[in-house]
Length: 355
Image (spheres, helix red, strand yellow):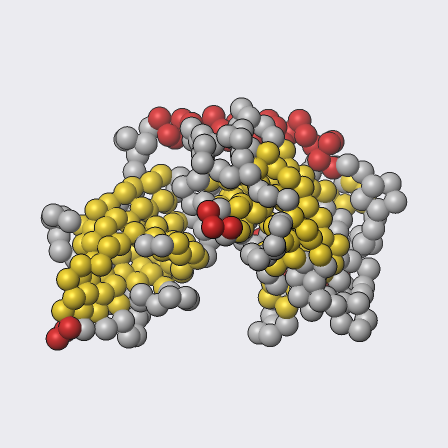
């Protein structure tokens, strides 16, 4: 099980974002009453599927905790089907989300937990606002309300660092991190992380790491908020440059969507993607660097792309225009919203989808 726990670091590779002058949306719905249940279990009681949360009265649209790939394996998965736990998260706007978690166990001395923050949308659609987020059973985690930092609940946690020569349930240093919801990307993103200056015992003594570290966490959150606000004040003078893509930028086979600025000084495309419904790849060049993006969400006419580190986001919202059947081409127009390094640009674009 020690090998399983050490692989967690591979699952936690998310980058820091800054949030300035965020206000809670007034259109958030209150999550309805719900039921929760364990996932399917095998004959030995090990999970085959994730825990499930189903809104009442009919539970037609349930959320099942997604699995996570075991690093180094192409087919093996962590299934978080044990010990479902949930907590309602009231919002300052009057709505409510739900914090939901499930555990994985392979029968050893340790367990893994995956967490989600669920939003209930129009038509009963449930959306998970958390990226892939896992921690060990030794972690101390909580949702905090800190209105002076964010109008949305903050996710804070401390998970142990297994040092050389240390036993599983002994004293350890902990990595503390804090995550805040960013409306620009519609996801939680990391604000900071740090290693504790002292060791804690989450075994028999069950130290409350977050209580002990609360003062330091709040200090860092408020400092990060001040830096983000300052960055927002300077946004008019600080930005990033999106430059045209060259023909060699992006290896796409089959259909392709290329978008250029409307009335731009160059007719070179600034965003290119392969237009498929799932698993799409996109390309954009920012400050001279080619960035590879992957489709992470789609809703109506909007498609959201992000890089692996979740530091660059592109929300593409397009309207279909004239079709040119003889060329297998469809005109497209709309906007791309590009968020990079905490700054955002919205660009009017036009182009075509070609097959």
